[in-house]
Structure formats: C-alpha cells, structure tokens
Amino acid sequence: MTVIAIDGTFASGKGTLGKRLALHYKIPYLDTGKLYRAVAFDLMETKNSPENVIEAIKAAKKLKPEDLKNSALKSGNVAVNASKVAAHPEVRKELLKFQKDFAKKGGILDGRDIGTVICPNAKVKLFIDAKAETRARRRHLELNSYQESISFETVFKQLIERDNRDMNRKNAPLKISDGAHIIDTTDMTADDVFKKARDIIDSILI
Ligand code: DC
Image (tube, rainbow, N blue to C red):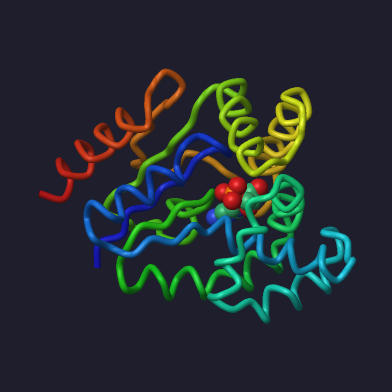
C-alpha cells in the first residue's frame, strides 16, 4: 500500500497540501494533528489541565473517528493545548494504533512523526516548513477568518512556543526523517507547493 508521509511545522501549509494531494491521487487522508486536538478538546470540556496525564490517556482511549469532525478543533486554544497533550508519551502510544491502522490501507498522513515513527517505511516522505514569521502571518489570517480576535504578536509568540514543544519533546519530536524531501513554502503559493510535491511524488511512484 502506498503511504505518503507529510511532516512539518505548524502552519507550514502541510494540511492544505495533504488534502489537495489526497483529492488528486484519490487516496484517503488523515490529519493526525486532529487526534491530539480532539484529546485536548475533551480535556478542556471536562475542565482538566492538558498536563493531567491520567485524564489525557482516558480521553485518548475513548476517541472516536467522528470526534475528528468537530470544527471547534481548529481553535487557537485547542491548538496550544494539543501541543501540551502531544508531549505525553502515554498519549502518543494510545493514538498509535489508530494511525497505524489507517496507514495499513494506504493513504496520506500528515503530522509531526509520520516519517519517523508512524510510517518509517513510507514510499514518499515530505517535510514542509516555512519561516516562523510567514507561518504566524498565515495562522493569524486563518484565525481571523474564524472570527477569533487575537493579535499577530500573540499568534507569533504561541507559534514559537509550540515549535519549541514539538521539536524538543523527548518522545517522537518533530524532525526531518531520513529520505524526506524538504519543501520550504516561505515564498511559495499553495499552487506552487502542490506542483512541487506532485513532481516529487510522481518521480518516486512512477
Ligand atoms: O498539526 P496540528 O497543528 O493540528 O497539531 C496539533 C499538535 O499536535 C501539534 O502541536 C503537534 C501535535 N502533533 C504531534 O505531536 N504529532 C502528530 N503526528 C501530529 C500532531
């Protein structure tokens, strides 16, 4: 089964790319960040801290596929808490099976540890990144489109904190996996990124 593993930094454009590639190649797509967001959302709803490992494990255990459709998962607060929840190795372990089962059937997965932990043997590995300021600007625009009033400075500060947590946690930190093709989207449009990714994928799969 063909697996395309997409990893990268927050707001680098990997989600947009993953969805477009899935439509183009007519294969399933999983945004694995939603698993961590759904666990964080559950903890917020039940007034538990994202640092509460016991409750986080419980939330991960009872996660259902339909929980991933919740539009509230897009919010800035959920995103911040998701990166805290994602630092617990026990939570990561709990969410592993869902991701591995998805990958068994083939498809596109995007996240932080897809090429390194979830699908180290993926045929295609992409690593998507962009300058922090560019990513914060994109995220700021996105949050404003959901009517979340938040300043650019706050978005930038949160993004740097999240980058640090995602890259420096002990368990499955975000890093460029062996054999990954790096795309820096700083000065690229979504169409440019889509074309570049297709060129890479077609050169590997054909
Ligand atoms: O991609 P995202 O912003 O929706 O991810 C939310 C958080 O979940 C992010 O801070 C990192 C974490 N995450 C992870 O650790 N591993 C993944 N495979 C996907 C996301």
